[in-house]
Structures are given as structure tokens and as C-alpha cells.
Length: 230
Image (cartoon, rainbow, N blue to C red; front, top):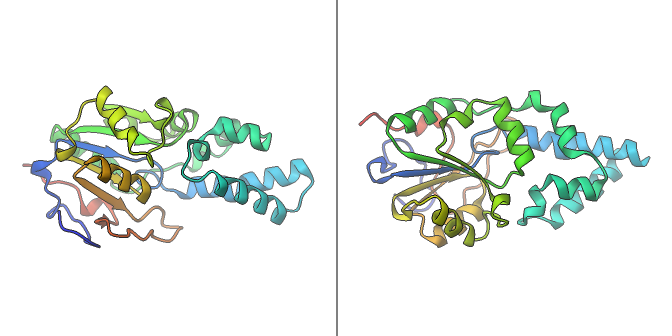
């Protein structure tokens, strides 16, 4: 795989070398706008009403709280935020679940991986309650050999130790593994562990800016990376 700011397509991903595909969920397979709207618009409005605050003050407070937990499991933990904000976060997510949607061509991509007999594993930092809602509202869960929440291991993807813990339970060969994620810290920890093909998903939502892939190879749309039938 070529280095530094290489835009990937099906033709330059070495699919013949890849046995296992690890896939993130939010932003990578699913449109990230749902999560942005929930945390940055809907929850501040609910919190402002409950605590008799202005929307601006509520947003400032919640943004600061969220920023303080970035890179930790708390950042993703619905139980933590239920306690911190005194709001029924999982229940509130149910109210907006109709907004959850997969990116275009995700199902086609997953079906092709299945046709090629790749081992396909979801590895998400999403809390199990959030994961359950998103699997309920999309078809993506049908195409995975394993669906893993990092909460099950008590280690976020930003920590290199998670990949070893996953490998011990669900064996895969790092040298023959592709990881697709929109989280650059997760890609970096995976690369440090030895996962050979870290790939940044930069088109997290049509309503949001594309992310900067840093030094990682990247792609925009799944239609660009669907592997050919061998």
C-alpha cells in the first residue's frame, strides 16, 4: 500500500493479501450526522430546558464535558453521560433513531467482502446500547462475523492493547488485515500494533466536512473501494 495522502481505490488496495477486514461503525459505515445532531444540538436543547439554561450555556457546558473525555471510553459511554448530565441518554437516542442511516454503497461493499470470504469484524467504540440501536435501524449487522464494542474489553481503540485483546479472542493475522476507520488515533494504534493496512474513511457525512487523513491512505466513497470478484 502506498504511503502519504494516497487516495485509495479498489485497484490499489492489495485485496489478494487481505484476509481480515476490521471496520469502524460511526462515521465509517454510518453517517456521522446523527451523532453530531444528537450530541451537539438535541442533547444541549434538552439539557437547557431541564436546567433552565440558555441553549448557548448548555452547549458550552456539554462541549467542555465531552472534550475533557476525548480518547477515553467515557467519551462513548452512555451510562457515564446519563450520570454526568442526569439525562436518560439511551432513551433519548431512541427518539431520534429514525435519523440513523448507512453511507451509500456500504451494503454492497459488505456483501462483496462476504462473497470473497473475507473475515469481517466490526470494532467500534460505541457503547453497547448505542450499537444495538444502530444495528436495529440498519442492515449492516448481517454481514459481520463478529461485532465488537471496545466496552466489552474496557479498552478504547486509541489504546494499542485493544487489538491484542481482540486478536486473542478472535484470531486474525495483522500482516493480512485491513482496518477502515475515521478515527486517526485508532488507525495509529492499529498501525503500532502491526495491522498492515490502515485506511482512513474521510467522508463521514454529506452534511459535515471531510476529515484530514493525516499521513494515512484514504478514500471518500465506498463505490471507489469495492473489491473486484477474483
